[in-house]
Length: 335
Image (spheres, rainbow, N blue to C red):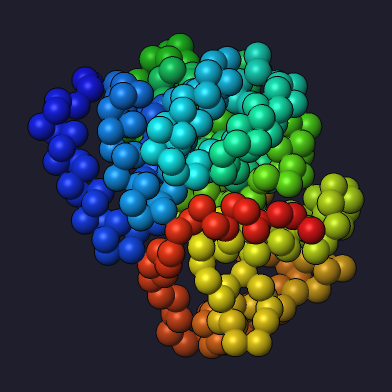
């Protein structure tokens, strides 16, 4: 992989500008991935310059979530300031056993950046991540489960260590043999997850991957896990705060006007759930299970889920950017 040429950067800027004119929320990068890791900061800055005129947002999977995570955060904030664009760090975490316990440092950096620039983050409520099988993350320091493999699809759902033992290979050689593949990495500390998730600048996101044959349980369980396990059972934050982090705060951050709150004249995106019984059932052994305690769901005012099954046609619609996203950061404070 290599960095983009001036001609390629110009072409990408044109594509981004066309998308912003069509209502895109902003620019998202995945600088940790092999396809983008070679992109220099200056390259990303040039692309991000298109955001300012539209009041659009810069969201990023950081260049690293491991030891150099603070440097990666500084890079993201530098890009946002250059573009005069709000910054959202996607799925903020302390990845890797050697990084556990560093969440106070990350949150301090986030708070410092927020003093003079609109920033925020999202977090999913699990101490395990899911992505493609990255050879750089192969380790025996924590468990890794394979979610899919193109050459060896029958290995989906098995631990890499178990597969390697069956094949008589090292973990790294087994990972190479499985490629291309996906994996769940049990590489985070629960305390870090809780600290990040409970911070006022953090939204809740699922980061679910619906096409995985053996998906991370967050696809089915993220939001009920926050409502049940973290809010009700552990008392990490009040129920109204949990709801706000996955509705009103997100709607404000992304300028989804007339959504995220229950008010007269707003779009009726509603979930009827029992706060005493709601809980996630999906787990890492059986990840495709619907949550308990959710009675009904309305999307755009239409009943879309009831009696444990979908109701009629899907009622979702494309929501174009409406106005400047900068405004939502001034108003989006946790109650």
